[in-house]
Length: 280
Ligand SMILES: Nc1ncnc2c1ncn2[C@@H]1O[C@H](COP(=O)(O)OP(=O)(O)O)[C@@H](O)[C@H]1O
Ligand SMILES: [Mg+2]
Image (cartoon, rainbow, N blue to C red):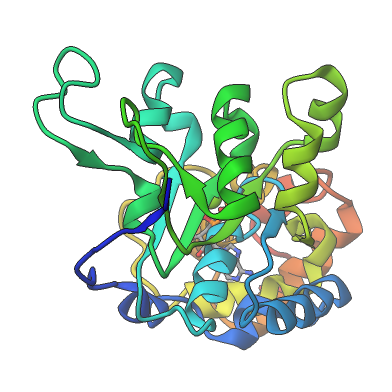
């Protein structure tokens, strides 16, 4: 049976607006060699159709990178559709991703397009892809192989043109060994892997982050910087540090030095928990 190209009105993307909210490139990438390598990969792959896997701990900038990849692609005027995989119950993930036909199940009063269709001509971003169940992985594999999928309850396949970006904070290879992640799907989604270093691995960039984020509003931040470092969130860590200390670049450099000297975790108490600096 012939596959029909879906007839979809263009969905206005907010991608180009969002990109202006991101920190400047020199802040995002900083000075560390690992970020330089990530930048080269981003630039080489942004304009291709190659699926990209963003791998890194929480807070290492996977969301930022997904937005950059989309914004720098020739798909940027089409939607970037994000799916926070763990936020969607397993029982709903297929209808959420692929949509459903009217009457497909109790409560399906009207046909609904899924996120895959909404991303037509644009980019589909699967965040924390490791939490997808095997059945959804199989259907996404099909989509990657020939661009086709079926709405839940549909008789016919549909075809879309989407570029896939995935993010993972856990070890997917490990998951392929314990059987919770399909090996063939794993190979498909990581044609290119961009490894994002933890804040611990790029401590030299902390002063620039402090400098940048200390200019942004500080309201509403309640967590401690130690916790922010622990979960690698440069935004929160920088804001917390700037709160405790005068937010200057020089001070940031000293904080960074103290922190490195103490080692990951070790130097945080003296640096972040508000003890006066003897040089002050
Ligand atoms: N390289 C970076 N440069 C500047 N800010 C960053 C960077 N990486 C992360 N952040 C900031 O840290 C916070 C968490 O980043 P996010 O992209 O959501 O991480 P992830 O998706 O990996 O959990 C955000 O406020 C983001 O702006
Ligand atoms: Mg994220």
